[in-house]
Amino acid sequence: MMILDGHSLTLNDVKQVLFEKEKVQASDESWKRANKSRQAVENVVRDGKTVYGINTGFGKMSDVLIERDDVEDLQLNLIRSHACGVGEPFPEIVSRAMILLRVNALLKGYSGVSKQLIEKLLVLLNEHIHPVVPEQGSLGASGDLAPLSHLALVLIGEGDVFYQGESMPTMKAFGAVGITPITLSAKEGLALINGTQAMTAVGVVAYLEAEKLAQQTEAVASMTMEGLRGIIDAFDEDLHIARGYQEQVDVAERVRQYLTGSQLITRQGDIRVQDAYSLRCIPQVHGATWQTMNYVKEKLEIEMNAATDNPLIFADEEKVISGGNFHGQPIALAMDFLGIAVAELANISERRIERLVNPQLNDLPPFLSAKPGLESGAMIMQYTAASLVSENKTLAHPASVDSIPSSANQEDHVSMGTIAARHALQIVANTRNVVAIELICALQATEIQGMDQMAPHTRKIHRKARDVVEAITKDRVFSKDIETVALWMKDGKWDKILTLGTHRKQSI
Image (tube, rainbow, N blue to C red; front, side, top):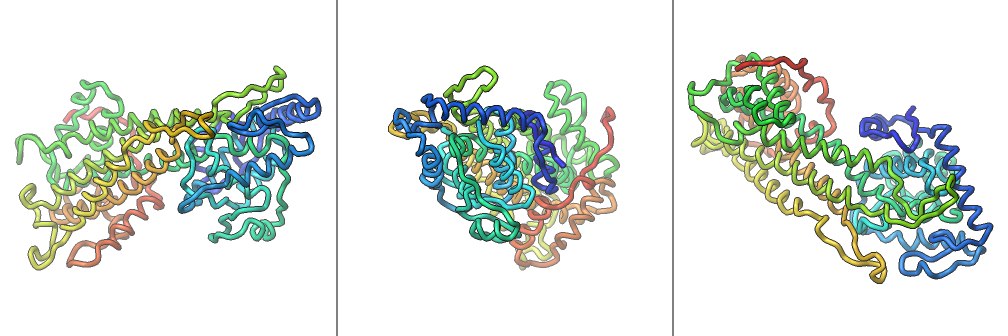
């Protein structure tokens, strides 16, 4: 059981809830904070004080006072009017992450929502009822208003949800598990939608997938080193320590460990003096991606535990402050960085694919074909990889450099953070397909060079991969192979396959 307290959620915790389906509950201390915050809101309503979002309109209409009898209608109208998302729904795993992050934020005790509302969100998580949330429509400031409104609709029994593998009306799923909708009270609608949980949820999923992919890419690149008889000297630890980037040092070490015992790798001067950059610079390029990912991880873990709605209730100090914690700029920049960093993994992977299939750059059969000329082999797989890499370059254009004023210029600078996160997630998916193609080609190349000469670790990966995709013995519809390998990389249990030994200095 995962205990949420609003302060200590980690990416590893999120992974357990999202992918291992661990149940969640709130800590006793967080309930106390949430209840105190809720009492402060009720005091504002009782005393007739004018506070934004509690008894005023929203955005440009914040100067419009709302009568006490209309406070509940204000919240209901807010949710319905702001549920303007369009496009395909987010993946269900993203929707689940949105609920988790919204609950964690509310438990910080700055939002002023009722215990009943938080309990309902916890039930959605534990019963695996996930809102259907359209991907498009958020500016990433004033929070993820449109996406989070679709989440909030579910609490009042409206909208649609994913349940047991199907999309259905909310009330149908509620009926199946005996849940009743709630009535939103003062500030609760605003507290649900005025936050960064959509962009952060997409960002968390993108990061977790990118982390796994980056680990897999190192293993695949190591196998490519064997398929191309790469020079191991370029991975010498002293060389990388001389540069000074720890992530670069770490990548070089992991590649050395993957290739320990290999008879296919060479030394400088054996066949050639230097390899092309796509082999020789694996630690430098992959290491730079890990540097970026470490930055992204830090920002995500801060945002996952942040109070991002408006206004915030500071019950102990008896003050309510309107501010801008909903602005998604920290995550927008982080997601742009993540997209660029992962796109570079695809970039260099595609160059390795070219070296695997181009007979002018290797000693392998042209395009790894069983019957060159009569059969094309992996020729068009490289085309596909090149296409995906080119698409990534377009997706990697920073979303965070754009801003469009909204709400009659009251909200005159926005982050576009949700767009940045969506693009990063798509770049991860594209890059996974590119690396899947590299793996298919590396499997073939190492078989041609001699599997019995592979390193024990890469040979183990090879055997596992051959359970997923067959050797290229004749031309076939390779689209299916790419899809199957990419799905295996995304959902398969690679942890044991990629497990390496402890660090040891290796002079080579």
